[in-house]
Each structure stands twice: as C-alpha cells, then as structure tokens.
Figure (spheres, rainbow, N blue to C red):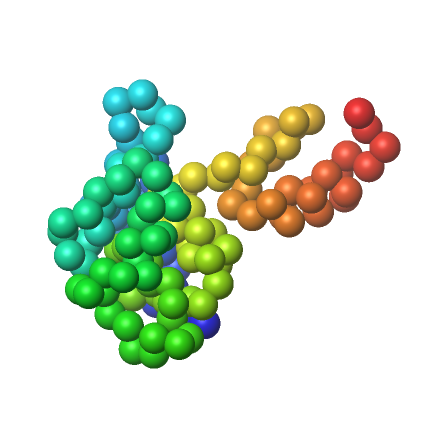
Length: 129
C-alpha cells in the first residue's frame, strides 16, 4: 500500500481547497451542489463528475507517478498515493473531497466506508428500526 504523505495533504473540504494549506485539491462542487468535478493534477487533461472514471483514469494516466506498477495499480488523481485495492483508492479520494457517501438512516452519522456504517449501525442502533 502507498501512504497519504501527511494528514494535511489528504484532508480537503467540499470547495476543493485543502483545509490546512488553502491549496486547490482538484475536486470541486458542480453547480447542482451534489457532485464533484474530479480533475487530474498529474496530466491536467482529464476531468469527470464520476469517481469511478477518475479511479479508472488513475490506472492508465502516463503522468501519474507509479513507483511499483504491481503494488500501485490505482494512483490518486491529485497526490502520489497508490494502492492495489480499488476500495482503498475510493476511500482515499473521499478523504481529499470530504465526501461521506455512506449515511445512517437513523441519525446524522456519515462515513467514507460501508463497513464503518455497518459497525455504526451495530454499535449505536442495535435493536432500533
């Protein structure tokens, strides 16, 4: 697995700005406010509203750093993080954008990974429904 570098580089707010440095992360809200525009910082030639497309682009972008092609099948569109697992790159990207797509139907809890939501439901809402 790759690494995040440091926490400050990894965390971003919903405007696409890194909350600690003020730098643009390449993820921006669209006009409808529900989607992000993902822009590849490595090649500056690829944009999409779909996370699956930016993840797929990360497999083939010639401008992305790829220290070990076997261990880093997926590379982040805006930093040097790489991993072999698609679930890991997806959660990493959510860290950049601040997106939390897995939402609890019983409270305001939201998270970046489905298994965190399952654990939340088991620990906080066991027996509720």
